[in-house]
Image (cartoon, rainbow, N blue to C red; front, side, top):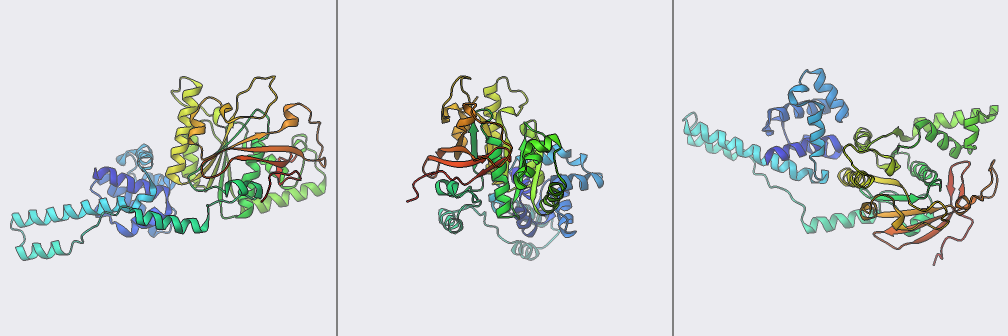
Length: 419
């Protein structure tokens, strides 16, 4: 039992800065019963005292440099520590368990010395009285409700720049999963990129991680630059730039590259997502897209998708990260219709775990009626259905879509009745 608590404590330190600070202040090296846990916490404490950030990569490098990485089980064991954390918010409870066990061991040592007549009764009583009693902290209903009120007064963690989305959803909170579903080539990626840009544009301190299993980081970066300029994304492919455009794009790259906490990575399987989330500790993650992720040992598309969305849910809850998951929908090739939540492909678990499900519908593209766009044309009509909203109402809204720029904006069309 105590080994599990020590693992949860150390794993929490590698996930959360708050947990790291709390643990450093509450525990000492001597409080850990396991020799390898003592070495790990001693190394973590040294990093803190040197004012060096603590994460899986840095800790692994330091332990390796000291020649003790393999002795504590290697990076496999450090990863196991992270995976052992049920909920990082319970760090005070884990610390209390570790401290309580440590104090009990100290008392046993005193009593053993007394039994062997190494100390007197008076000395034993004095030593025991100097060991503080530890109350194992658990969150009471009163504390939970009060913390909920304090949090609610601030609203959810992340607001949309598109006010119509806030009208229905109020924003996005930590630990939530938001699924963006759509048929092939319906603008899911463009909407995701727009939301990623909007979140950072509203608050440059936010850390956003964009993980793509479909495009290269270069392709994603093209769309971001096309959105910000704006510049037709096809021009990037063709190398069509005049001097002023090149200068403007270079300025954008300089400014955005310096100030934005945005990382774009290629992923192939769920393990890649976990790795990058632990490495970058983002506030918001975009996974583009679910059905393209591999899964070792999966024997069917259903098993693969179900296992992956379950792991994404656990990751969102354990790290309190808002995760947007893009998902393909199923349809007959000749069908021209709006999507339904039952179209989510390969697993019913997607609907089950999602706090919010957004379904996109680009009617002109579905009907193959959208002509080649060079830029400056009337925006395409882009419908977003709120098909599931665990804390609110469902409905639909209309946005403006400029696919050549990968831009999604507030619409000139009537979205809903703003009463």
